[in-house]
Length: 339
Ligand code: SF4
Image (cartoon, rainbow, N blue to C red; front, side, top):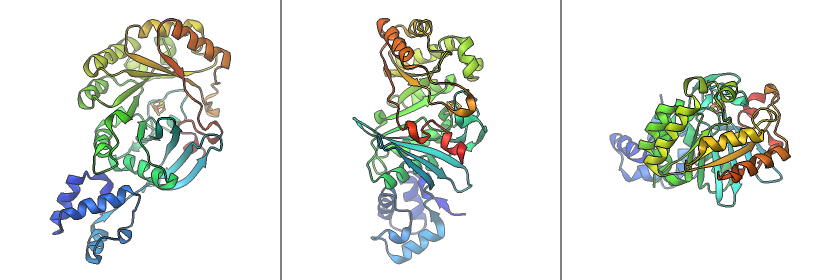
């Protein structure tokens, strides 16, 4: 079976190349073509023909196949539906922000976490993505958009801390100065709150940003929309977040999706402020991007504004997320579900 080079760090690939009797520097040459999106050894102009043959006999560059791209006319958001070699489909999103271009990648094909507002979990988990499959989404998005990407968020389909080994290796590949060279501080991982992995993550990647999907301020409400709360309830989750901040001195982002009539009242905001008091954090308020299958509705604008004011009044930093690509099935998992 051919090995996918995207799974290798440069030093691992150098070992492979040397083992085939080739010069070590060839690995770096090949690597630099790959990060430009070249996935055919024959197009790597500085390689001798015999090396191209050797590479074709031993390796493959498995970039995900683009099935569809939806482009927002209003803000340039690009949403990709990709297909992997085993026909599993995943999504990635390219977004333009003032501070640079960001790609949101998937870490699993499907998800088993069962969050009620999320389309990615409706058919359960198919499988974990490999490090190279996560990385390949970014290379493919750069290739298609012809734009350099400087920020990455692991917030697409899947729960990254349910696939921690592969996500860890992906982070190292992404940060490699001979690879895409994305700084650790420009990467954010989002979790629904798997406590033991939050502790590990703080030790392993103290410079990578952490976002935690909270979405409710009481256990009753959170359990209703996020089954993970049965296993890791709010009090224990916030203790883990405090440990993380003490260890890394980094600010945590709490994601809070505002759902009409479910978690968007002033009382909810007051309860949230009480929970987060004294914690180095920022609250990202997300107006729900409705998923028809869930029957949940987006919070009303006046309630979103009142919620934000209530948090600010109580000393909690918060912003309302810009609603990117509303017209292009931008909520996680929607495009995959429709196809
Ligand atoms: S929100 Fe994230 S963790 Fe929850 S079901 Fe969707 S993909 Fe999984």
